[in-house]
Image (tube, rainbow, N blue to C red; front, side, top):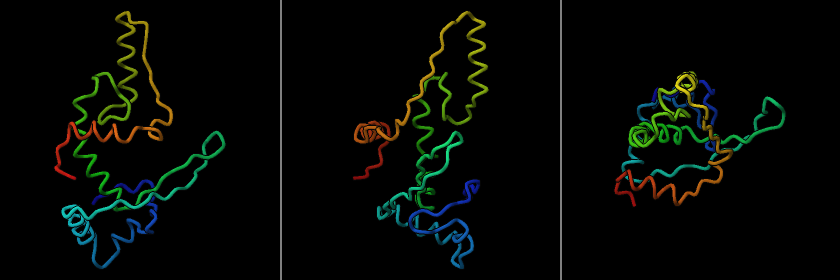
Length: 151
């Protein structure tokens, strides 16, 4: 569990922090072993997300959800498993939020296209999409690609 700590490891609704896990006498290995057993026996249930509001640069605030450390570990593990599965579906010229893809690569691609005579660029930003994503449809799409026998 070499978790990234750049966001200070804020606690979720359970109050548990990365620092406390690392400092506990039981240690992180026992913590991970308990989590592994919860996942193996299908006893794991994610906790609610702690909601806070953080200031925006231009004024105002935006909501931020802080999951528990346990949920972050599970989410990271799932992400590591699912990214390769779904990465194969993405268009080769899609750059947003993809591994090993950076904004400067997208800009270089645009420059190359302009030099080849292209005059149109499609830039899509779905504002607040994850606030409104159709959950049932998303789960069906995932189920078509992932067979885990979970019921």
